Length: 282
Image 1 (cartoon, rainbow, N blue to C red):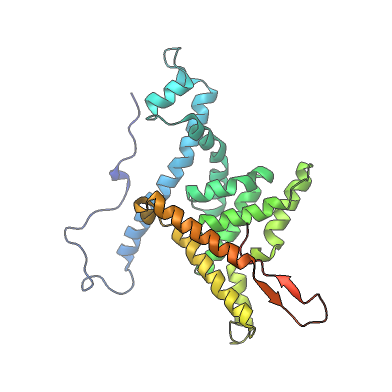
Image 2: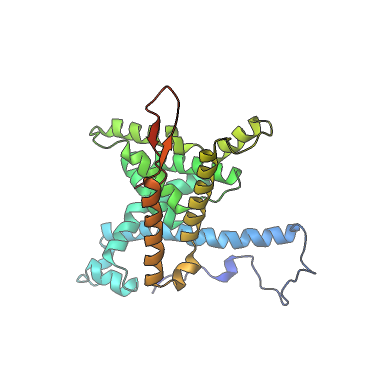
């Protein structure tokens, strides 16, 4: 007999008898509404915490061979019968990542989304769970302070750039140092709050450079961010057909090929005068 799971009684949320309207609910949240919203957020955090706790539980069952039941049941049979057909590969992934998820939660004070966890794992593998948690927490809080949402694709790109810096480094300690250094010193590693502070120091100067190429690059970066955010829309993903997804992917790649051929000319005396405009990676 399984122990009973948590129930709604553990939460302080209640459904209203009548839905709120713009006339009855307006202005800042009052103290009671703030408590209700906090309870709603707690439910989301509980669900994310339960995800890594499942990985921990699976590792306990596997390593202690608790799955054997009457003595004959295999690990695969246990997953099929007790976890509704959970695949061995997914079970392995959960066992592999729960420590990082737990470490990030302790550092950040809240659990991270599963999509962020998957993107962060290669960084932890080349440094440590503690270093990955520290780096992610710094990145997350910088986005929060800048009023920006951190998405999985941004985590993935930063990890990709950091990991690339350690290519060919065999010594574990040196590899970890190279990855950590690349995370914090690369041009794309500038935090959103640093960008905001830099703009403030300009004393009200125009955000855009007088160079039209820089102005165009700002528009391109904003467009890239918009595309990255759009790809994280789970509702749109569910209704999008495979044909539509392929068309959109082909369009993105076509734009990337066009931009990769752009040349930026310069009349300066300190160089050859022409450089490649690497606007799109990979």
